[in-house]
Image 1: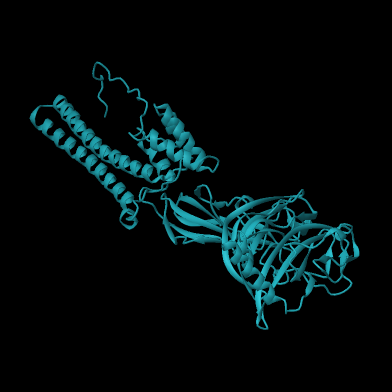
Image 2: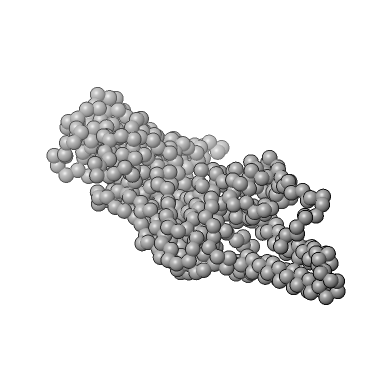
Amino acid sequence: MIRRIRTLLFALLLVAALPLSAATRVTLSQDAVQLGGSVVLTIETDQPVASPDLAPLGGDFRVGGIDSARQIRIENGGLRTTQEIRIQLKPLRAGLLKIPALAIGNQRTAPLLLEVLASGQAPSAPARASSAATDAAGPVFVETVLDDDTPYVQQAVGVSARLYYAVDLYNGDFRQPEPSQGGSLQPVGQDSRSLRVVGGRQYQVLERHYLLIPERSGVLRLPGATFNGEGESGFLDGLFGNGRDVVSTEAPARTLRVKPIPAGAGASWLPARKVTMAIASPPDRVPAGEAFDLVVELRVDGATAAQLPELRLEADGAQVFAEPAQPAETFADGRPQVVLARRFSVVPQQAGELRLRVAPIAWWDVAADAPRSAGVQELRLQVLPGVGGPMRPSTSPPAHGARDEGNEAADAPASPLRAIMVWAMAVGALAAVGLLAWLASRHGRSSNGSGKRPQAAADENAQDRGRAVAADAGEVAASARRDELRRALAQGDLLATARLLPLMANPPAATLGEARARLADVEQADAMALLERALWGAGDADAARSALSLAFARGPEWRAQVAAERPLLPPLYPES
């Protein structure tokens, strides 16, 4: 019963369409094409034939992807069913080629002419350029878009492969093939989706991004993007079939003419569209012996982080320590973008004027075909006298106070205040020792003749009390440093860790290397070696943070110092 209803409905639709005139039209996406490229032949017909006879094209063309779609329209009170067939053709030779008439059902298409240009040849007549607007006759098509088709060697070229579809796609394979030779192609970023109106028709667009790096000068051929899958078919197929059509389409190949590196480019070769450099929030005044941070930021339009040179900071009269650079890469405006930030820790050695210079970056402007240089002006800072006087030059890392997250303003003055308290306690202890010694000597002389023995005993007692006070002050300072080390390890602050470890040795070490040699634990020494390599930019900062956190969880373990033996008998002549 259902089969009879389907047959009757199909017959009624065909009868309703009979009064309409039969017609078959054929068009080309462009009138001229370079040899190696391709064109799209579009046939619109009302013949109930799945595909035309393409055998006459075999002599001059290679047939590529084919896709089709059916449409039903109401015209003059009746239904008209049309089929649109899109055929990709690749010419096999240069010259004026004839596309012969093709048989489709009981009709034939009109013959067409196509001008195929040899390499470097200009078209003899104005030709319609292949674009999304001219290729938008079908429900599904693809295109390959280049950021620059005349790049330099090693220039980062952005490639966007776009899939346009005005029908539902059930499955398929969408890809951008790699060039056969002369360049490397790699995917970057994430797929993006959008809606676009092309030729008066709304399409959904799936876009994928790639990075093409030409490896040598000359002609570089990039195959066009391809799609093979299944898409929604016409209304009649939805009633009497599975409602799906096989969809196969391919974009024309793209040809790049790669230019060699210019003679005036210099040793550093960085092709890009725009390069800028800046320093984030430099301070105006800094104290001697105290570390401060500078962040240098490099922004590049049209290059990747792997192509950028090293950022360097130079200073006279100061120690400079650099952390590993942190890149952030994106894909915008059809090409790669990168922001490279590097933090430098600077320790002024003495009061006065401090000059800081960031090494400029030489680059090549691909838009203007001219050399450029990106940099910032020299910084001049006023260095104030430090609390403890000038800092002794050494190879140890700079001072860099740890900050607790969410309370930076409260923790900023903690390290200088603690240092002042320690110095005040030490001075007070020495004054107390001197006062006690003076009082003991006066008491001894007044109570016992010459008073040498009671005075010596009093002096020794006073010295013991002074040493006890000094020991208490030292224990306070050591406890404060242990707290700072725990915070630095928890926050992964390599510079603060490098400053604190030499100070925690007894007596304090002058450099990281000296402190490492005095460690008793092998794992701690290995972790400090990783720290030294990371500070100079030649090691893995994350590996150093992990090793330091594990090795110094209970604090540093130092080798025992050999104490000087005290004589069995007191000296014959007491020291003055």
